[in-house]
Length: 368
Ligand code: 13P
Ligand code: SF4
Image (cartoon, rainbow, N blue to C red; front, top):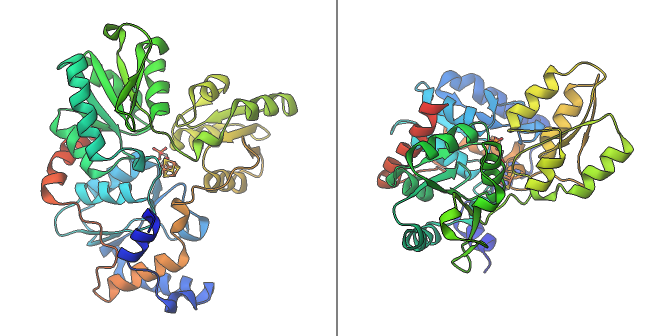
């Protein structure tokens, strides 16, 4: 059995009932449950979710905003998280014991978060302590498991999102002389570069081979980047940029910092999901944009701004497949289960893990 088959065998799958309902029936069911439950129910939706789901979100946002909203919300007894697994875990950690968090489809993971597990992280830490001694502070992108957040919290580190990465990297350097950045090498590299760390001061830790990829004297290393990446954002290339520059010379290119250093360097602007949305919203009618981020969001921007020319930086881009697991049928199933008192696809981080993970998250929220 491969990982997906094992997960499918373990997690509950969508019952036939919801597969046989029409779009109208599903939407009516969701609307009536939302009405009946009022503020006892909260549906956060990440910007990468499909329109059919986002229309029912009580709040939309990037991963930072959704974490902040979860930390603030004390009214909702049930939080049905329309996003991916690590976001639902974060919401569970930041809410109270009595608040329940559900993920409508357990297969909504994140390929980047899967590129670092806790065993690899502990092994890496041991290895790096031998090389560098007690000079490293760990930072983890929120796109990581609760166990890794917990490890980072227990070692005086913090989480970051793409909205506050620069602030958090500066914060880390105020504490220690080096940092380990998990699990996205691109966000780590782009952020450190922006605050003045040279590329030849950054090493890459390869978790598969347990080696450090670096040419030069070790004392030069300031940033250790975990060798992980987003399988969506890695599909934007320098060739895409060259094509846009040639075909649309006046077009502005804006990308997410999960794109590679080369792509970010050749773009006009780079920033978090929220930054991209705000930049396009603030631009004058008639402006034109090539956007390097997830396709559900790009399509939404296209339909929300008919007065602007907006295209995907990569014309063959597809949505994030795991974000896309959440659909109308799974949302209806999840809400219906809540009404029936069933805890279908409940996300529960164990107390010990949650304690230290919350330290890491709170250090970030205090700085944001
Ligand atoms: P942000 O929401 O922080 O921009 O992150 C994008 C992302 O890839 C979420 O998985
Ligand atoms: Fe993970 Fe990339 Fe999808 Fe975000 S877009 S959830 S980082 S795979």
